[in-house]
Amino acid sequence: MTRLLAHVLSAALVTGAVASCSSSNEREPDFVDPDVPGRDVNPDGVAYPTDHLGGHPRSGKRPGDRIPNFTFQAYVEGDRAAGLQTVSLADYFDPQQKRQKILHIEVSAVWCAICSSVTDATVKVKEPLGKEGVVYLEVMTAGASGASGPALGEVDDWVTGHQSNITTAIDVKSRRLAGIGVDPGVRPWDIVVDTRTMEILDSSGGSPLDIVKYDRSYVQLVGTYAPPY
Image 1 (cartoon, rainbow, N blue to C red):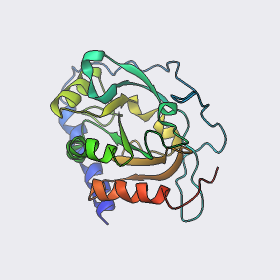
Image 2 (image 1 turned 135 degrees about the vertical axis):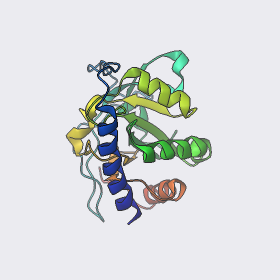
Image 3 (image 1 turned 90 degrees about the vertical axis):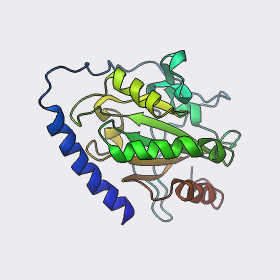
Image 4 (image 1 turned 60 degrees about the horizontal axis):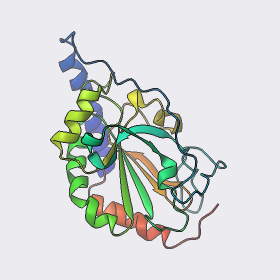
């Protein structure tokens, strides 16, 4: 029920955002977001798996698909001074759980007030939950209008305004993530991935009521079953 409520609120917010921005004819252009060469191996040199790719999350005992090895341009750990860097999902592939157990992808948009609150909450818990095996990746998919962006300046302002320590990537108009079923009109959207296999454990719109409880539940889950692939 909580996640559904957030879904409805997000839809209302984007409608208002589009209306409020319609009177302005001047805005920074969308970020130029071409596909850039990424990495197809993890930090240990292990190749990213290429079978069972898709967007369906785990359901009961039915395994989820592996998330494709998307590549983004991103501010790593919110460090704008270092400039945009290439981040591939292969960077998070960790079959031996040497670095992390789950990857939590938070799909956000500038227009989304709920996303703003979620980002603030994530900034606070990133370090303690990182010690428990959680790693975060925020992906910005739209600007102040749900139909455009984000512009680079909007992402810069987002990272600075939230004092973000989260790796913040850009996927203009959700052109990558929409391919695995992420609804461009629903924000926030959460994707949780088992880093042992890159299996999608959850992919859903809305916001968890308690991000700590939510992420810990998936850390516990990956400790209770053998990887399906």
